[in-house]
Length: 387
Image 1 (cartoon, rainbow, N blue to C red):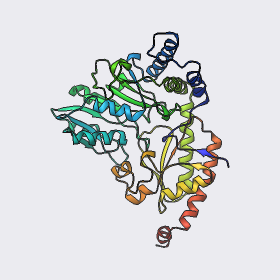
Image 2: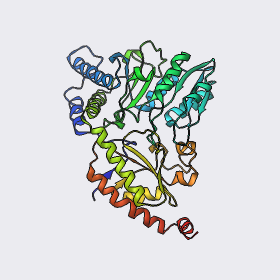
Image 3: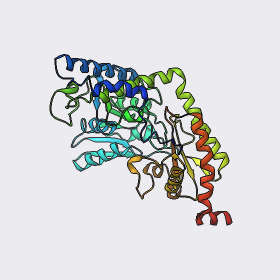
Image 4: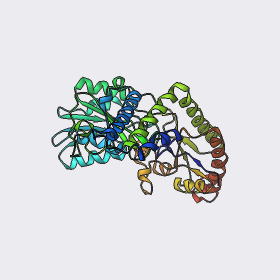
């Protein structure tokens, strides 16, 4: 069966160039990067080359990059590394659970947390963040791009608010890295998280940008790896893969590949909305990353559509992979004011660097027909049509 994968916000395939870069570090270059002999020093050099590539992507110093096991650890290190009992943290209602659940844990340990709302298009209002600040506010954590809708948040404005109040600012850029240009100085953040498997590097590797002079309490205790900010022997193959993926991402901005992806996404949206009645894009009027479209199909269950399309060879999702199987509607769409039945009827299409125009053709040949068939079986749709 021919298969097309449009769930790249959940995870991306490792690009062939990334895999080739990693291969030597599973075999001939196996040394521990902390060892001073030849084998250790050749892997240390590879780690530092990758660190430089990630720093170029984020426009920061090499020394400000801390390698982690992924975006979740990077988010947790940023939050637990700064906030503690008696502090106040400001975050948003649409964050990834790596941030939301970390903040819930902070509340259990005596830290206060304010969850600012979003508007109907899924964006945080900077004034709400400013109004939420207190004398004991230690940290603001607001994501760069939402994983379900792709909506970009006003992180530069929030960065200015944080700087004026002398408060640390962290942004989860897991869904932004490789899709929009990132400049940590322009954003004004003190910490920024990325994850390898969202930009065609392997799963199990990520990074946290830590602005020079930001003192973090480590979560892991052991050796003095990563300048004593993250103990543990380095995952050299993963780090090399992340470095190569960062290089490919930087080149995509120069070559126009990112804009081409945006055109494919726009074609998916416009074709579906014109071919299928009772549909719309969640967050359509907001600025979004170029690879993501979250489309609702009224009068059907989103999970039924995901399964039906999967049987025909098209992989899409109902939202965050971490929440798959959840009975409750998406917390992101709920926060935007989307009614529960429409939230459950929403499907995320997310493209990756491996996708082609032919993939888009394949998807557009399946979606209208499949939606029509499901609606024919839906008593809710029949009732809506008859009324």
